[in-house]
Image (cartoon, rainbow, N blue to C red; front, top):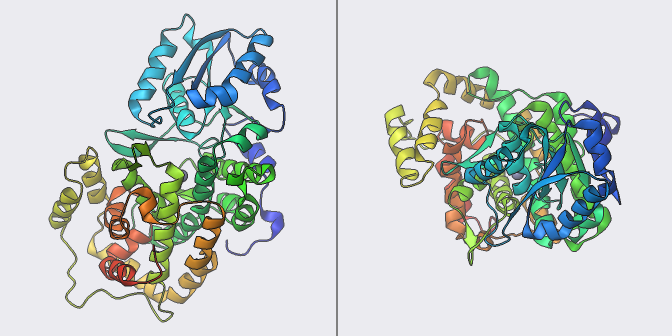
Length: 461
Ligand SMILES: [Zn+2]
């Protein structure tokens, strides 16, 4: 799947045509005017219910309301979350949306409309699915890949998880609104897009380890792979000025994120677009990182995660002759030792029980680890070549993220460099989705890599 030609890269229109949940995605000037048509064509409804926050109501909500009223579409209610504190994708917000929707006179025929960024969209997406409703999405920023994705990233019981729920039937994204979004939202989207580099590398690792017994290590699906990987660097280059409000760049970024969302819609999981770098971010989401009380965006946490994961990849594959070796006295921890380590790493965290359960579920027996170790050693040269062909070298990645106005240092998340590097240990415990963090832990080489990263003068400075 590493050899491809331009003709095999699906366009946004191809992805939309192949999508099994989303029927229409408009991204053109004046597309809000088509919302009444979208409602009539794809939904059974006798009214709508608007969900926004104070910022997105100003940016788009008022305009959408006027258009709906002008078309005689009944607005059954509106929920507007405060702008401060910044909205969280916490499950209790889904409960609030569901309660309000259910209290309407005819809830079964009221279409929820999400007007906002990734958080508003994820909350409405899951609330609508739980009520067995279809919703319509009005994205207001090129900030995440979740608009067209299957699933919503929700903090539930203190644990960030992808809860299953279908993508919207229709979306209308007004380029002028996207271009006027605050720069930090566009740079968040850029960071989320850059993370797909690592997601691709991790899928290669998973493809190798899956058949040998690694749990939840999916094989590569070429059709889905082609949706995100071959065109990625080109899209990143075209999106680089998005945070400066360049409208072509903002549209390119939105399109690229929408395509990666469609790849999740096709695969019914986040595997094609999320790997080790998102695991760093999930830990920081549990830790609720903020600066001066303002929570750090998903995309900015993912950006630092992508830098950390790139450093990790470079160190793992540094030696052309073979994978790193564990220390001579290395003894693989037993399941009970492992449980104690994971339990103490997440002591006091609301997600403690779920993380311990996950880490034990993915603990492999010695025979499976041996098969994987042998396969990595036997196929090392080819594996290394494939990974390095995808990976953007650390220096180039940093330069590109800098141009796109993304954060570059852990301190911008309120973390010391040492804390950011140490996060790899907890990130590896988090999810049952095989990636390089898992492989390096299984081989007993994680500590060696982390100590080299700490001593380096290049990484995460
Ligand atoms: Zn993401």
